[in-house]
Image (cartoon, rainbow, N blue to C red):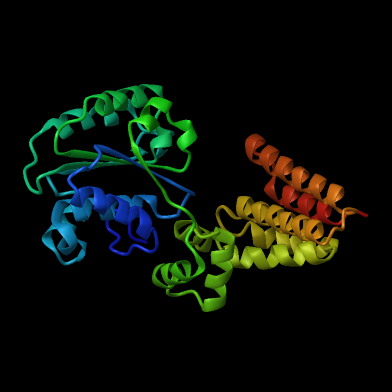
Amino acid sequence: MLSPRENPALFGHEAAEQAFLAALGAGRLHHAWLLSGPEGVGKATLAWHLVRRLMGGERALDPASPVFRRIATGAHADVLGVEREFDPKRKKMRTGIAVEQTRAIVPFMRLTPGEGGWRAVVLDGAEDMNASSANALLKILEEPSKQSILFLTTDAPGRLLPTIRSRCRRLRLDALPPEPMRAALAHLLPDEDDAARARLATMAAGAPGRAVALAGEGAVALAAIADEALAAPVRVPRMHALADAVLRGEGGFATFMTLLQAGLADRVRAAARNQSPAPLAGQCEVWHALGRLQGETERLNLDQKTAVIAGLELLHPQ
């Protein structure tokens, strides 16, 4: 899958794009833009799309254009991308955006633009900044440079300092409606059939990036197992077979437990709509118990197969 920086395809979010283009056309472009919305909805993809429009106009949206290629490869002198980095010592992603990364934005944005008339920075995952990083960013927002634009993306705007939020123009991105979601998944998941893409669209709740991640985790097969488990009690030998299937892929445990909770939540909502209060309390307690089971298993590094079987037993108590 292409990174947002490399991805030429944008699905939905027309209102947010038009708000930016209207400000650009009127010469009233704010120095900082905060793109917020659910995880995987396309915030970073839109941010990089807007950077290309800023740097080269509509022609820069063509993947064959020189501006597009330079931005995609990180070779454009006036464009900088900042996000959590890989820690080679620990051999895993860092837990946050380091203060050195945000401090590097200041001298970059104060340089005179060399190519497109603007300097642009995309800070993807702004909620990952620690306190020092956030304070360094505040200096940029309090003393913005001319002809420079900062794009922040976040799944959790409430985790940002109020002083950061107040200095940005907000663009709220909502979940994609069904038709753009179908088009996005047909483009992003061409090897999946229509039924699988439809199931992934439902599970991802209008977030294409989330659907792609779920597909990589084998979520369609896990959803079928969850459906079986929710429909009727599972006998002990079958429990072991299902648990083995769940744990066959990396991340299967977390995805499966989430699917079980989602299925229970659907049941509770349906019962409430049908004014059937009798099973609600019990099913709500099972929902909470599944969450506790998952949390304790992950936090304490307990045996996941035992936890899956325990979860299956919770669904249909004797």
